[in-house]
Amino acid sequence: MEGSQFSVRSTDEDFLELLRGHLGDFRVPDGDDELDETIFQVDCGTSRVLPGGTVVRPTANLFIGSLRIFCGPRWEDMAGKLIAGVRDLVTARADESVRFRAAGAVIGDRALILPSGPNRHLPALAAALTRGGAGYLGDEIIKLDPILRRVSGIGLPILLDVSDLDLFPEVNARARRVKVEEEGEVGRDSRTPRRAVPVEGLGGHHAAPTDLGWIVLPVFRQGEGTRLEPVAGAEAVFKLMEAMLNAHVWGDRALILARDLVETVPVQRLVIGSIPEGAGLLMGLDEAAS
Image (tube, rainbow, N blue to C red; front, side, top):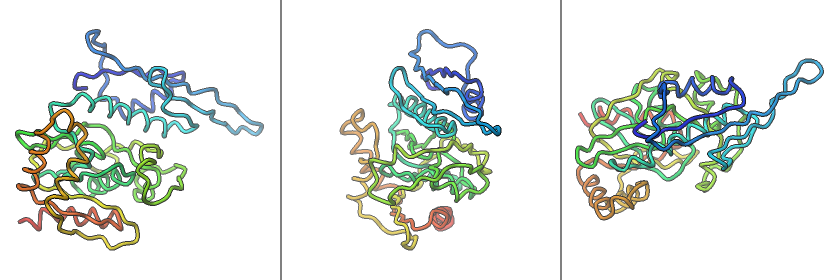
């Protein structure tokens, strides 16, 4: 995976089978001793059978080295946390590209990116676009070639927040719903349970690297009308820099790139009261530009 290696050790083979369903395409027969390897360790505990035959699944723990990053009874949540860790591992070394915290999709023959601060609903917007026929690039992280201006993804599943699973009945939603406040939750976003959803499970496909065509800044406001709005150039540059994950690597060139993108690519704000309606407006960008 772009020079990054990882391995998963589990006390229960069934969890590895669950994980292979999402990461099986990235398996290699043998490791490369010259590459650093990150080790995920999974302690699934021991299930108990109650009188009457009910099976009680114990609390499971997920570690990177000696650092625990998950504790809970649901393997699906643990798999989501592990895949998020893999995503961070892979993209942390991808400094040949400019990395954005953003969803990404291909509409027509051009790429749309949706730069954002941490927000648990962003993957649902990417999933709705994918279900609507857009090519999938990313749910929360995308890469941009600063020379060719081509956007690419990572090839991992979409990590849907469990609070948005009701929007996708085609996904097996035997998930507990979490009660969280609607906004002002930047610190909470990275801790909400996620479920790995294959792009193919939404009837979609992973898209190849594609020329950048649009930048849309999403704002999630439940209960408001969903609409596209103009955005000032200075604000757009600020939002791009805020969403750029490796601006420190690119230095002054990062700001120059952000300014150039805003000047050469259409930029709008999308106020989202409804994720399906928001995805519908975005799918119409290609037609509106024709």
